[in-house]
Length: 509
Image (cartoon, rainbow, N blue to C red):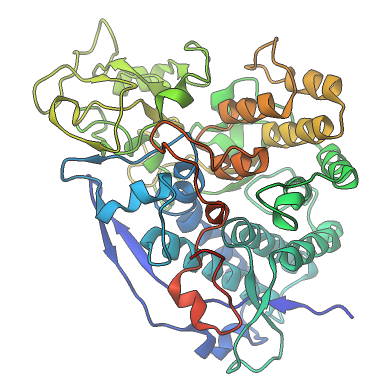
């Protein structure tokens, strides 16, 4: 019997970002949405309005630097948020993500958990609307599946309700494997009803194929032993067939077309995005150029996140993915898009703009040398900084860059990995070498594909997931000089989530 599920939403909380150096947390705890029975009831609310709200609501969890971005990237080897004197400490919250020392009280982890369930609830409202068309329900179910994917990835088990069930009863809970199987089945059931449009701002068939490929590729992690996953050949065939089903998409001729303002109108590669409207309404996409830049750069940054020297060294220093001079950026900011290392300059760039100083009146020279707590002469200069999205200088706080959730390069690399895991290294190698910025000498072992994905998808939210699948997540690295306990392959379920007696805390927490 097919049963449509509604997902249980736990209490809400929020973080307000101050556009300087510190985060001020304001928690709205204690609002248990299970008491809001109407949120799960069939209603006559306008489905179009509800669906638009479900799309817009994505901006928080997906675009803010303190939600999925932090948990997915900072937990891996490509990003860290060092404490700089009195700035960026937040009771060690950023450091705890990178060093794998989070506990169930961790604020950003809790906020991400709550935001994902809130997004699932927004999708449920569309599904429960009596005015929704089959196409609108399919779009909402794709959104729900996407959010659910992140719940499975980060937290394992997931809570849900059946339509018409007693809203005063405790929500039921899927195991990680059951949740994975359910999301796969739901996606496969809605593809026919999704639009064939290649418009990446709305759920579409290509997006569903991409997400199915992601689920099948990670099936051994999600449904098996995450510490030692196996990759069933039949599941790898599913990865390949779903990627092959994607139509109308090609790799962008220019890597940075994926990240410029109006990127959804320019790039041939984008499969699904969280849309922003320049000058009008957007999420915190501007954090992708503010969060690491120094206060004396233009625009004035927050002097926060960096990459690590060992991650930067995965690239050829002249790789266009980490060093490209975009005329508008050089003119307005004086720097390249990608990673920043060495002496920094003002608008106009080297030879035109001034050589910048830090607030200690020392040359602003970003270095690979980095510690988790910085001070003294390196307080403001330690760490290689990153600008992943080309700054929008016209939109103000509402930038016109859409946040990239899925792009074709990721899909092709998933296919190459699946081929390699089936033993077809020659085919995988040929496919990887179609990436215009990848080395012609790259091989296609799983170890090498881990590095290829690190280079191609840097700071796009996949590093933690990739490292777990490749078996490198728990290993020693520069600022984590120990092997992590395997419990950190899952995040702790925040304390509000475990008030439901059906929800069992992840092992080890």
